Image 1 (cartoon, rainbow, N blue to C red):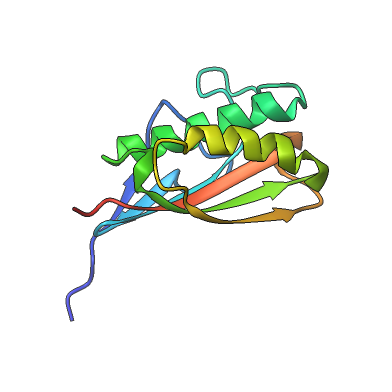
Image 2 (cartoon, rainbow, N blue to C red):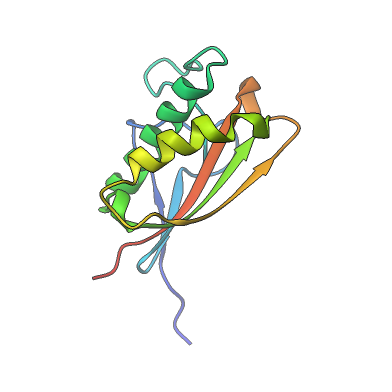
Length: 133
């Protein structure tokens, strides 16, 4: 049985990982993106200072930058998981999320509340994308 090539994806348009992992891994046509928080890729500093709308916009910008580096676009994203430190932010996040995916089929997703996120962030999103024809 032939093994599939596993290719790490890295871009300077998204923040460097804050641990021992890759921004994404490409296996054949499947792209598995690590969770993104609201880090500015240039400075490495958090964006939004706790403002959920600003954090959400930066997280989605980072995530889509990784997908685009692998050769995809937002319409290739088929599954996301949203992690929130406060589910009361869901309506605000959902509005920005809906706007981001308004021109495509919205991905399947899950949204869960968590007790804490890296760097004190309020939101993290990961995704799976299909880059096939």
